[in-house]
Image (cartoon, rainbow, N blue to C red; front, side):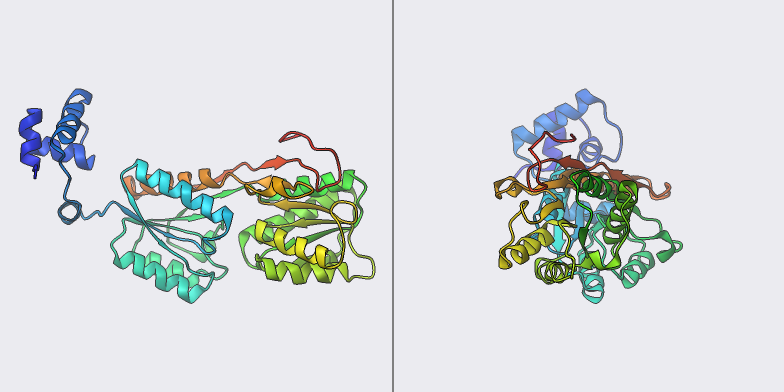
Length: 343
């Protein structure tokens, strides 16, 4: 089995130079770096990751804690995180907090005990215990999708990345209003999440922009999952004057809303127009095809990795929050002819 000494001898460099190439601990001339990489390839040298971690106090691993990994949105985020991590030579350890604050703190502790170099976390509604643990142990962390108010984590520096939420929902509401709808319902997410509050804010802005009154009875919570959305949509449809159009605030709740409509024999868009936040790969297979807001989920995952690695390289730099633009995907569930994206 080839050793680091063999690689150094083959490349005509010192063992220290080979170490710097492997660990990115010092700038090495491109020609020298390439000679080392060629020698590694030729000899089939495999670095001893465990020994390297003992020397550098780094394991080149990242902990990822996100709930509802089966959700297509979070699956794509996972793909973005994994691709970004592998590109930089990092492995990934994954845990599902199940949107439970106590379980969330436990799984993050387990990841930390595995000596990950940093964490990427989609926090729960009540992340206080999580934040206190991360802060107490000074764990480099990036929050994704769901933002945490800095007042909830005094003295702890964290980076965040998410998609735009408010303006895209405003766009959906004004689009439905332009089609003549005056009673537009919103099936919102889990109360307390930043995504939920921002999407409700976008809904209210859309009504105001269209000159429509806000009716609190038209805003219901689907708890960010299909079963809750099915019940919530049923409540909306049972109103004395039900909405003629719906906005669902994530892809799981879109499925629940469609079930409720089908159970009542209502068709989309003839009886009720429908627009949803979150596009997914099979949204255009529905009949009608779903008009949606598409989040840059893979890019969110990739940017989370980039922010985390920047934090590891410069622990004292100011915290950053990145908001990535979402796209309006115009199909036919809103009740009008299909158009191209961003139309």
